[in-house]
Each structure stands twice: as C-alpha cells, then as structure tokens.
Image 1: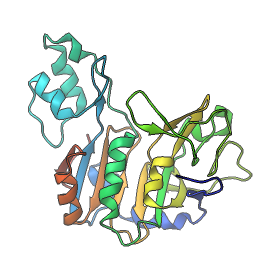
Image 2 (image 1 turned 30 degrees about the vertical axis):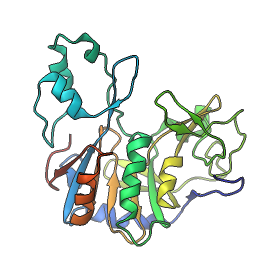
Image 3 (image 1 turned 180 degrees about the vertical axis):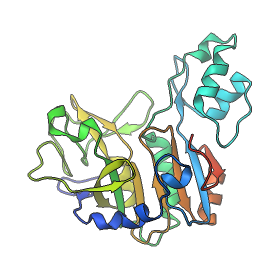
Image 4 (image 1 turned 45 degrees about the vertical axis):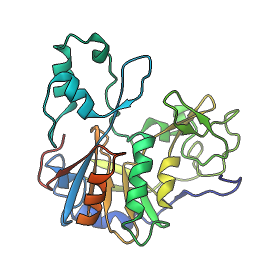
Length: 271
C-alpha cells in the first residue's frame, strides 16, 4: 500500500534521456519503427482489448471478436475490419461493442506487460515515461487533477482496482500538474511533444487524471528502462501498443495468456 508522502513519479527536466529514441525513429507514421526505435532484435504488437457486450461488459480480445465476425486474425489487422464484419452478422448483441481504447492501454494488460518487462531489464526501479503533452488532462485549465499516487482504492465497473479520492485533492501523495510552478520542458519526437517522468516501472499504472474524486487511468505513451533494454510506445492515434526489445522478451510476451500479443517487423505498417 502506498503511504502518504511516498511519491513514486517525479517530473524530470533531463529530456536528453529520450534522444536515443528520436535518433532511432524513421519518421512519422512510416511503420513500427516510427513509434519504437529501430535496431532491436524483435518487435511486438499488443492489441488493446474492447469492452464486450452488456450486461457483463468484460474486456474482450480481438480474436474473440474475429471469431464472432468470421474474420481470420493476423498481426496487422485493424479493428475497423472486425467492426465492419460484425455489422454483417445476425448477433446484434456482439455489434454493441466499445471501440478499443485509442492512445492508452487498459490497466489490466498494462500491469501484465509491466510484469513481463521487469524480467528483461536490470533497472526496473529506474524507468522513464513520456506523456504526450496534447492530453487535455495535463493542463490546469482542464479543471482536472493530474498524475498522482493515492493510498485509497476502489473498483471500477470492469473490476479493476482504481485509486479513489473521497474529495478532490485528498490522499494525493505524488505528482500533480494542477498548478505547475514553472514551464515544463518537453522532449520532441516526430510530430509529438512529451513530458518526461521518472520512477519505477510499475508506477506506469499510477498515471492518469482525477475527476469528481475518481481516478481515470491513462497509460504512459512511452516507457523505457534506464538500461535501454527495451522500449514501449502507445501512440495517441493507435489502438495498439508496440514493444521493441530482445527476442527473449518477445517470446515471453507472445506466451503470456494475459496479453493479446503478435510478432511484427520493424518496417510493418502501423495498425
């Protein structure tokens, strides 16, 4: 349990930490290696789950949607292809699906991803996080409290534990951007600007916003360890998270039943 005063996420002005990523990207929207660095042995695409039909509204893998739609799954499939195929099926219940979360990986697969990633770096306690500056919840005029660590928890409708504040501002023990005292330095990647945070790997689950006392998680857009053993990117316009790293990491991700993971190549198109 996080105790009051134990802030695990910290702002960083050391934006040069991201230079190695920029130097190994090929440009904007030109393939997998335009969101994660080139030069790694293996690349993985993790599909963001969708919220299933009522009343359960459980998280559903794309493969289950594909089976219902009569579509063959493949590593570069786009969810629009599945949604279009569902429209032609007689099962109206399964046509009432949510869209996969664009630009953020749900907490459940994010926790599983972090669990696997931690086994493939010598520095899981020292990681870097990039948060896209275009997120409205990062700016004070949004009226929302920003990134923080809380010592209270509640369950959302999908059964996942979420920090819950009894009133806005209470039990906030970590980082907030509700009233920044000075300009935040940004690092730039093609067509994107990011704020930089540092902290342990599992603190990725503590990024998000608070509205009316409820925490809404937002996964970091970039994650990498201090030893640069791998890099994770959740591009703001995509319903997939991409990972670049060693083959052993790719093998573990593909074998993990908690993740909807697919092997891709660095120059494969983004989906």
